[in-house]
Length: 154
Image 1 (tube, rainbow, N blue to C red):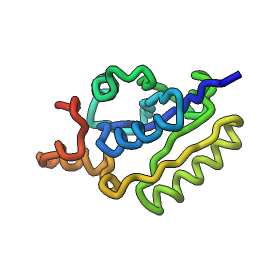
Image 2: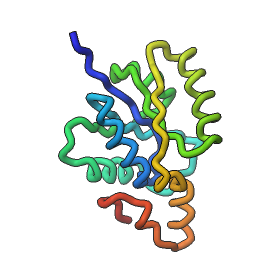
Image 3: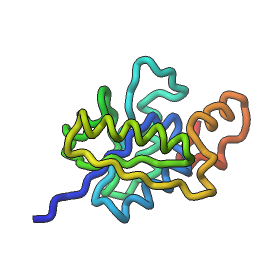
Image 4: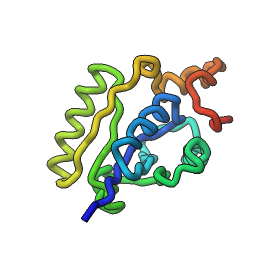
């Protein structure tokens, strides 16, 4: 029996960037379904409300039934169990991303058995883009449009 390969792509997506979108589109060749899961952390200050971030992501991927958008709190591996996902999708832009993500992946193996992390390396044209940098451009009044997918407007 074929089990559906469901991956969770967690993040704050504050805002979603062209790099995120590229990663999801590439990962659709591996997974049957991807849940873009917006993690809510009360300790973290965000620029955009979670409802707006969710709306943007839904707009970017509208018409693709293999993409779901959801919001969660707590540990990502607990969320994976809740939605019956056995895979986590993470993007790597550079060596420091790898070091951080490797540690998180190893901890996830201890806390949430049955969840395997898949890393996709960013294409060179997206490796310099992060939500943090895009937020700084927006806050500074710069043009962030080159880093944002169609459908993200504020």
